[in-house]
Image (cartoon, helix red, strand yellow):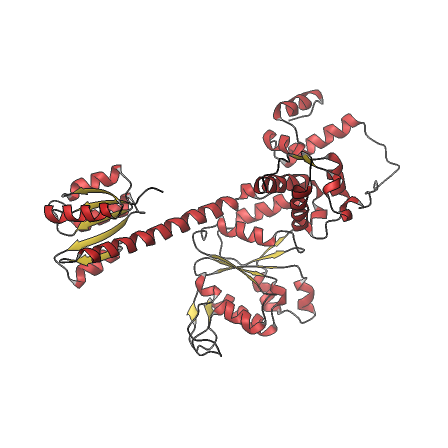
Length: 451
């Protein structure tokens, strides 16, 4: 790990040398200059973690150095030091973006502690930014797997609504990837730098769920020894994902409706309301429309949640995605478990196509993870699959009397379908077909497939 880099800007030679010696002893990579003008030039050429600058300097002063850092290197922290300490200059420096402010005379332990505190904070911010960028990559549209017509429509809708403030209701059976879609909405939106906080509404009792969502104040109930922020307050500026929304009680439905209407929360035990800016994405595997008709779900809340609806298909409704998803999971778990498995046998894929997948994509992922651990050959075979899949009844032809196509006709039709689904993307099509691009080109020309 590289040492933190520090630039010292101080016109007092004795103090500059002392600071440089202290910072060097602390293990930092240190540069130093007596001039604000030179410091700005150095900041243009070199990335520093921290700039320590005197306020009073020949030429441009410390405030100008601070402003230059804000323009040229926003990730660089700044500490202001000066003998001209006043509340006004301290406040101005903090408003301009200084991390801390220290007045001369100061002892060396004091500056050492302040520098360590500022650099620790910067490291935490940098780590959070890195992790957030990794999440944005993970949940980018390009990493959502599936090219069926139903999923392409889902992607198109996400692209259209990702930056709006509208609530989103995601419908689908258990295991269809509702939270994955919710994360894709958040991490591709203008809210992506703010928190995404999921809550499983079915996992908590009513009183615990209320405290989890809206927080509580000290003394609100036995054990409430301090104030605690709820999910809606912590996620301010970001997204709250309410999974299993159909399981919340009538009382919490009423509270949630008020939050959606007014953008205000009221912590448990408090008489004060707090404004929050949160986008709500909800999900359920239940039929909220039927629940509403039966009086089990508030109609006004249903219509508040149902501004944008995303209906995720079950895996049996998008069987053309099975091979692609299975390949994606195989790559993931073969790498994680360091297993030399590079494909899935045709027999196994045929069994996947016959099986009904009651657990949907989640079940497919579990099956592939299990097979990756049990398989002894270079590809997943039927022997490493669960008995429920191996014994799945074959799917009959929808019309046994229909004229059968030749193998060449079947191949032409299938390749045309894959090319249409991928928008003519040969690289993606060849990946789905399990052949290289050169072979795909040969087949296109041999079968006279229109492009």
